[in-house]
Structure formats: C-alpha cells, structure tokens
Image 1 (tube, rainbow, N blue to C red):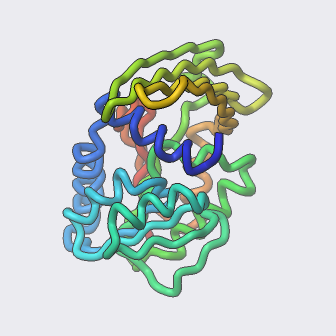
Image 2: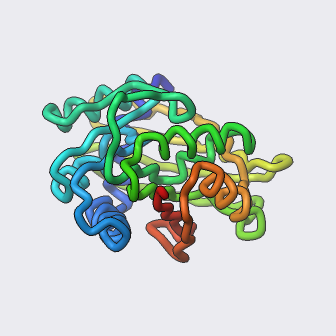
Length: 237
C-alpha cells in the first residue's frame, strides 16, 4: 500500500470503529493540568494525520505536531492549516522552542527498536519541555500483558466505502509483529487488498520508567488509558 492510501484507509477504519479521539485528548489534557495547571502549549509527537492534535488545538492555546511520515503529515496539514506540523523523527528532532506539554499517543513509542532508541526519543521529547512541563506517552503492551497469536477484525462502512481490517499479532523475540490485511471496496472500483506489517518493541514498564527518569522526569504510570495499555506521565524537574 502506498503511504498516502494507508493514511486515508487508516483514518476511515478508526472513524468507523468509533475511536473517540476527542475524549482521549480531554483525558490527556486533564493529566497535564493536574501536574501543570497553567499549561497552554502542547507538541504532539507522532501526530499522524492529526486525529488527536485537532482536539488538542481546542484545549490548548498553542499546539504543534511532529510526524515522520510525509503522507500522514500532508493529511494533518490539510486538516489543520493553521497548526504548525513538522516532519521529523522522534529520536532527534529540534524545533527551537519548548512546550508546557509533549504527547506521544497510540503506542507510537513502541516503534523504537531498543532501549537506546527509547531513551533517545524520551530524552528528545523532554528537551522540548519547559521546567515543570509534562510528557505523556501511551505505551504498547508490556511483555506480560501481550497476547501472542491475537487476532482482531473489523468491517466498517464510511463515506460509501466498505473497509475490512483483519490483523494477527505474534511475538518474535522482544517485539510483537502485527500483520494487518485491508480490503477496500466501493461502487466505483474493484475491491483492493493491502497488507501492512507493524513491528513494535515489547518494552517493560521498568524500561519506560528508566527512560523517563534518565531524561530528568518524575514519572507516574496510570492504569487503563485510551486503549487499555495505560499512560506514562512525567514531569520535568
């Protein structure tokens, strides 16, 4: 699948599944302001197509996004023309300013391949915080909570298209490997089949916490979270 097509299908699938980005953004804003009541600026790292970012924009006076995929970033820029959206890698970006809050949602952090990359990403995000600023990261599954061989499937209809998504996730060493199959069909064109593979590191809770403390953050782990995987919230200084 081309990245541009994937961005479009990705958005449509999660819209059809009813993922509540607005409620998730509100929950994160509450976590931030419980630690920094006057927080008014936010950077969303790995912002994707801007599904969380557009709701953060209604909750903070100034927001910006950062995304590695140029195609997903193009969607975010179209969706939010007034919001600065930067192309960059969470491990080594430098925006030349700091924020009251930095977020990294939807387990994007698990694309880091090892503890060194995890520490680099958390450290780079922490470097973009004001003193007392808050970093919120949604992790992937911990090794003990991951279910090998897990299969999931959804069929949704959005804007005249029917989309099916079926995934199977297995464990390979210290990572999960998810193979996702998409079938997309509408009245105007034949059905199309795409396959995408996601490799996500199964970091332990302790590894996440070590990355936070190594970056000078006091960290809390909040059970549950948007997808049942919890949230890490760290305060700088």
